[in-house]
Amino acid sequence: MEVNMKKHSRRRFIATAGAAASVAIFGPSLFDVSRVFAAPLTRRDIGALSASDPIITGYKTAVTAMKALSVSDPTDPRGWTYQAAIHGTHASGSHIAWNTCEHHTKYFWSWHRMYLYYFERIVRKYSGVYGWTLPYWNYSSPIQRQLPAVFRDSSSSLFVPDPNRPNVWNTGAASLPPSHVDTSGGMSQVSFYPGGSSSLESNPHDNVHVDIGGFSGWMGDIQAAAQDPVFYVHHANIDRLWNLWKAQGGGRSDPLSDGSWKNTPFTFFDENKTQDTMKGRDDLNAAAQLNYNYEGEPAQVTESCIRFVLPPWILQLIELIRWPGPPVICGAERVSIPIDIKAIRQRMLSAAQNTSQTLVLRFDEVEAERQPGVVWEVYVGLPAGKEPDPEGPYFVGTMALCSAGLRSQMRHDFKPAEFEFPLNRVIANALRTNADKLEVTIVPSPILINGKRTKPRVAAPARIGRVSIAIENQQKRTR
Ligand code: C2O
Image 1 (spheres, rainbow, N blue to C red):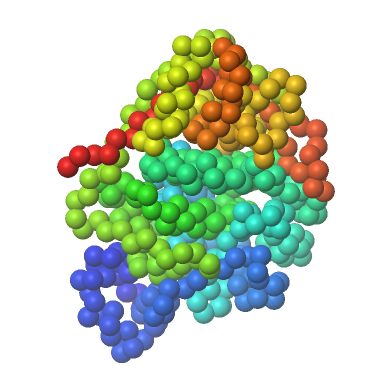
Image 2 (image 1 turned 180 degrees about the vertical axis):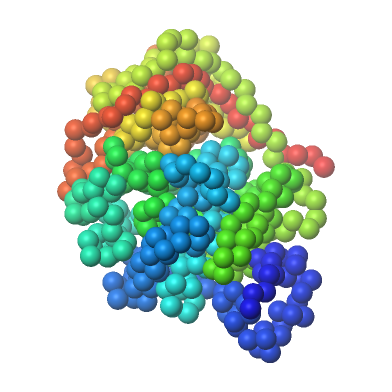
């Protein structure tokens, strides 16, 4: 028997509080199992789980079952291939909810939260583990920068062989460079989109995809990525970062006044094959609305859509200068762009000191023919002879192409990529000399092999159509 009730909808949930309260009478079988737990279920840090933990063994069991289901009935939306295709697929034919992932839009965080929520329910069912939760890959921890060990065991359903997941990851030789999983730029932003959401989508989200995918792997191709079981633990971490970003306060908030963000429905299937929809407003509060939290996170911020809330900030972008030269081509060598700042030096410095303004370096119209397979580091003010050091005072962020900007992956609705690097913290140092030119330096940054930097290889160069420096004005709305 199936009960088609929107368990995840807070408003419906309140409206049916009587029914929810009588769980004991109806019995758990009527409900999504996550609802019958009084306290939220906790998504665990995969680094703390042993190979025999039920979270790990349950994931393996479920992936095996879901792969088998894909073979016996390719139209079953709970099958592994169908689930991955909801995110993206190269397969032709159209099925409900296929190719619906959101990248480089304001729906990035909310869409992926919904996707994981239904995926987790399906895995929970097939895992055979009551209360199973999706673990997260916490690569912010310096000891968790290799592919988590349970994904490297070639006898397991969590393994993906080369070339779909490059050998260097499967052997444990490769690791993520610290600059590729540096959340500080995104965490410091106050606005939602562009802002914390888009910055953290770039670093670490896109970087980890590109690093694990390399030149040919699934993870580097958005239409193949969700076939790799590591995709989901990567995304659990990205989802956790949404909570952490909001928990910092200081005006950080979901776009609660944006009707389309709150009310656009997206389609998924639950563990009973029941088609369902979810909206942004249904997933603002993971613990209260979706009944999960993350191990070790601070108290979740509870936001409410019931009242009409004006956005606390208005964003305005003022371009100060644009690089007049030809498009910048980034390949395996370091590239420097000398920006003439004579006329804007004072404005840059005062913007950087003003707490309601952010000085930003912008790259627009960025594209490549296919996945370059490398992440670039970006520096501002790096002296000509100096070795780039992401721990040093000139590092401003990273650039990697993932979905947006890739001609080969986005044949139908091509959209170039854009990047924004906050400069407030670095600019005074970058301008310490009186030179009229400010160097923007772009350096390929390959994955580490046995902990060491290696010679970069780039499968296709990236082309930056427009480089500019701008001021982002955040004005507090006056009511
Ligand atoms: Cu929808 Cu990490 O991708």
